[in-house]
Image (cartoon, rainbow, N blue to C red; front, side, top):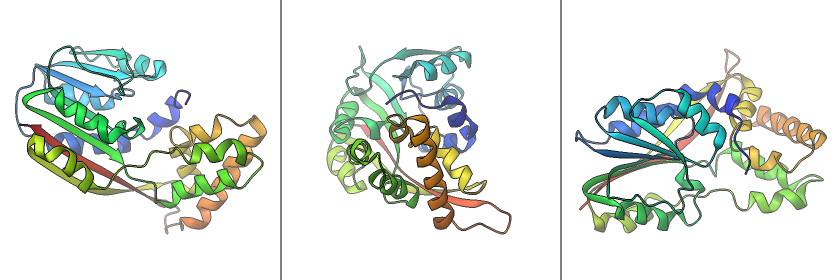
Length: 258
C-alpha cells in the first residue's frame, strides 16, 4: 500500500490519538529505560509516550517515509525515528515497553507476531497494543461491497479479501496470558461526530480506503468515492445538528512479561 494521505489522517489526529491515550493510561507507573512505538505514524502516540516517560529513550518505527518526516518535525528530543518493518523487528537488547497504537493489525500473522513481541521484553516489561476492530462496521462493509460491484471488481476483490481481521480477545489471552504476570484486555467503541457522509469519507480516505483507491484511475476513483458517500448517507442517519455518528470499535490489551 502507498503512503497514507498525511493531511487527511492528521485532520482527525485528536480523535485518532484518544485511543493511544487510553491505552497508555492502563500501563501502571514504572520507569522504563527503552520504549518502542511500533507503527508510530506521525508520532502523535510517541509524543504521549515522551510526556509520560521523560527519562526514557524512545524509538518510533514506521515504514512510511512521509509519516517519519512528520514525526521528526515534531521535535521530540528524547525520540529517534527509524524506517522499519515491524513484522520482522526485534530490538538489539530486551525492551522495557513495546507500545503499538493501530498498527499491528496490518502485520501478517499478527497473532504470532504479538507473542514474539512479548518475548523481546525484559522480565517485568510491558506490551501495550490497540487495534481497530472495524471489520463488521457498515463503514468497512460498504467498502467491500462497492469493491465487489463495479468495473474494478477484478482488481479490488482480492484486496477486500486481505483487509485486516483481528482475533477475539480470548485468542490473545490464550496466546499471552501464560507468559504474562498481568494480562488485561478490553474493547471500547468510540463514537465520532463527523460532518455528514462526506466526513466519513474523509476519515477513511486517508487510511482504510487507500488500498481500494490506489489501483484505480482518476475517473474510477471519483466514481468509487461517490458511490461510497451515497451508501454512507443511507447507512448513517443525520443527527439534528447535521452530523453523523461514526462508530469505531477498538480492541486493547496490556501484558506484563513474567
